[in-house]
Length: 98
Image (tube, rainbow, N blue to C red; front, side):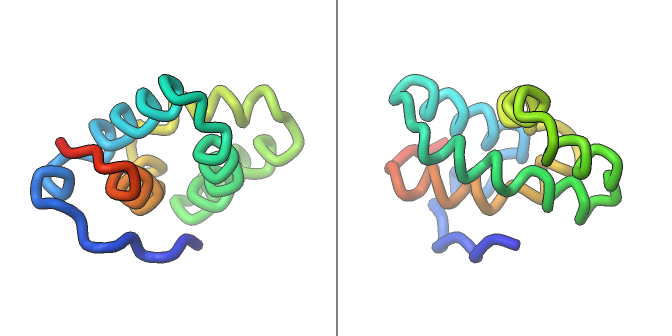
């Protein structure tokens, strides 16, 4: 699905996936980081499918507004866990610590 992120500072590694999501999304919104959101949008359907949410994954591919909402709200449950490497990679690349 996604490449493994580089080793992260211990403070980030201890955060929950929800906390990582919040940090990454807040930073991306603040810096208007379209590239991060595009990466997240591309990863969400695969993350949902990998966690057994097949109907949501198929729906997301065909409905951009649903996918955008998912990007902002993707910090919940098993999908957040599947997206964890993306959040960690993004935060490490931009020097954000927990």
